[in-house]
Image 1 (cartoon, rainbow, N blue to C red):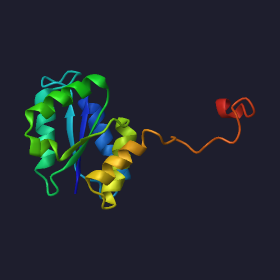
Image 2: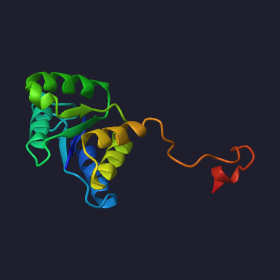
Image 3: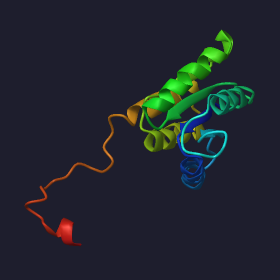
Image 4: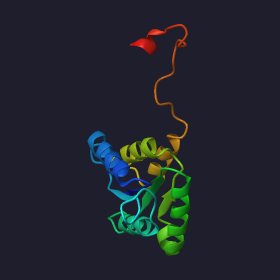
Length: 148
């Protein structure tokens, strides 16, 4: 099964996200976390990202979708990819999807038997999907939405 590599400035944020994925997606793929700095502060760590990628690549399928929280995490991921061999980089997909929605969508697709491409596509779909069904009325027509 293809894994997820989750990169964020907060380890606690990733722990909560992995819990959410595990609670909402039966048979979710493995999630490898790279959160915070090596000394436990907010930030990113090149070593943690490299280790998470290598852990994901060592699994049964040996591939992973990488998701991240903000732009500076993207920079760290770029440096981490430079540390990996070409054959390792070829088995990773860096998604620019929203971290939470992308992780949930990719995990659901992976749990359903999807591989790297399908999970990457599911994460990408999270970029354009609505969080709720389309509204049929505006807020001004139904102010109870604001007071309920």
